[in-house]
Length: 307
Image 1 (cartoon, rainbow, N blue to C red):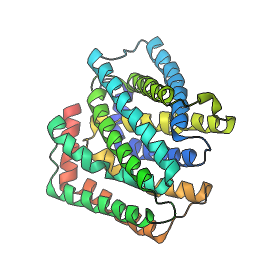
Image 2 (tube, rainbow, N blue to C red):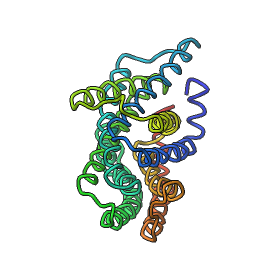
Image 3 (tube, one colour):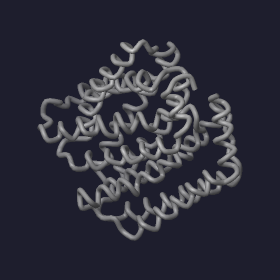
Image 4 (tube, one colour):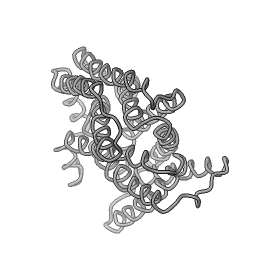
């Protein structure tokens, strides 16, 4: 660690990731409660994010700190392009299905990250870590199968949710690569800027009208930009240098429980026994994976690499 921020991230990596999950879980609820299309909601959410992070980057530069390396900035822009795919697919899926369905599809990300982490980071988790991870994923699959057959079930929506999950897994892996080269504020500023431009091109190509979004939904987009978009991404990205790639996606397995609870409280969406049982299985898998000897070894190796 070379700065107070890095020292803090190294000291409290698990707490920051857990906090990020809580912030992330507000995004589906805000999206589901809106009346506009997912694409336009994403458009405004990203441009509000560009404004917020541009101010943060200005303050960062005025304090005399570096923006980061050219390679790191290129990785951030690549991450932004991938993130734009996640945004369009995610918000559209939420509008077609339910908060719980889309959040639960996101729990399949650990499988994708595990495959990518082998060639990119040399991570080969031990057997116990893998088995406990599969327990958590099994809990997620159980809830997906139980909830997607209900009145909110929609095949296209579920496929878009899967696309969003794949894109986010790739975004996460690129984020870990980039964090070795750029500060959090610089990284997220270039991510949001690139993603906003990509989504804007999509909006123009399909003839959407950003000005058609009404004021209440603009406030929701602003909320998404500030809570999951800013606070969530900062909390999740901050400690990535000090954690193995396989661990944060396991924390994201808790997102459905938190998002489902928020949706139940604020939107009146169903939160059934299927979700309770599946959630308990997910938590057991997460705890077992991280507390296993294989999990502890994985974390120790990542911290040595970041030192």
